[in-house]
Image 1 (tube, rainbow, N blue to C red):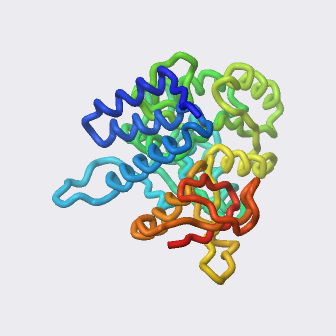
Image 2 (image 1 turned 90 degrees about the vertical axis):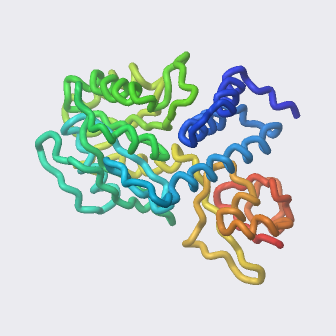
Length: 328
């Protein structure tokens, strides 16, 4: 099957070939993977791009001898999917994360309570997802290290205060503030983003329990639903939090794989979390590089269209919930 690559993809690929720094190479690869046509004819290309992205991220996270400590803040995901929550002052970011995770974050009824990024772990079914609370973004104010925090995340929650009369304006302020640093929360049609970071984003209206929330939320959705998936919650009444967790998992576009040692059962509570579209050989490489080198094939359970325990090739694309027995 032909790949049928688009002009946008070919432009991103050319940017990657011309890139001189690991950061630019990574941005180009992420853009290539985002816009490559998703069909059987590009499965191998998708796998190669994801492998290159993984390798670059590992190289960037490895400590370098003699390197000086850079200023600013970073949040180590420790291998968990990472979701950064951004929003205007007093939108309820800390309260929302506290309710989703059970962590005791500092919460107060005045703006700019959060001054440093605060991570917390959110349980979802049988995995953990890291949520990161961040300082508010306001007109003419954004901490200098915020774009870096957003750039390194797997996805973003853009929180909107449904009790505010300026809900629409705050979305544009946050979007434009990050855009000036070449970080995009999704994209507008026609915007040039080659070499920039484009982050999958959920727009979440908080405080749906206040009287004007319904009208404000409808206004926000009408203006932004073509750019962002939208949903509404209340961190106070806890309404909508279950749906939000499900949408976070969906937007992260991840799968859970259960390794099965030969002759034994898979452990149902300890899945390996991988990006959607990963192959058998990428699973092996995630477990150990040497395993990927010696891998010959695999047996898979729970794959659509396959008999349980059927052998599959190394480039077989895995699905959420698969049980996999690797064969060397």
